[in-house]
Amino acid sequence: MSAAPAGENGPDPTGGTPLYPFLFSLYPVLFLYQHNIREVPWTEALLAAVVCLSIAIVFWPFTHLMSSQAQKRGLLLFLFLLLFHTYGLYYDLVVDWLPRALPLPAVHALAFVLPGGAFILLSLSVLRARAGLAAVQRTLTAIILCLIAWNLAGILIHHGRSLYWQANRHGSLISAGIDRQIS
Image (spheres, rainbow, N blue to C red):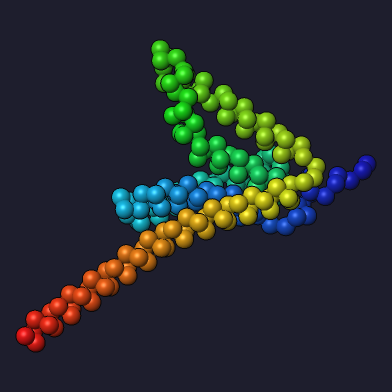
């Protein structure tokens, strides 16, 4: 009886849990918060980030049903989160092309055929891949880190600018009060 190659049924030789799917789960919240920063309190954005990260954490164990390799599991979770976060945008684009006489669940089922089929095909290709996943994982990690850094920078710049103007306004009010007391 021959032994299975390392990583197929045994422990994963590549190490621990990849972080990029979990970071990616935060990206839509950061993007939306940055673009709506004046309308959305930071506490609501934080709550949305916790919910999105929780979704990724809850679905992580389910990826183990499909593969024991952390690289494959990370890519599967990333594909699921990509589908999860983009389905609404996709649906808004295609809903006008779908028959209006169908009930809403049927419309969603029909709309889901293309992204669902793409998800299944991509997931199967990840599961069947024998090599090259480390390069994909490094590339996705770099892209997601850049996206998150860009949005965090925009958020921090906005809040830093707000604090600066508040401090200047407060300083101006104090100096105006002192000037009135002197005169």
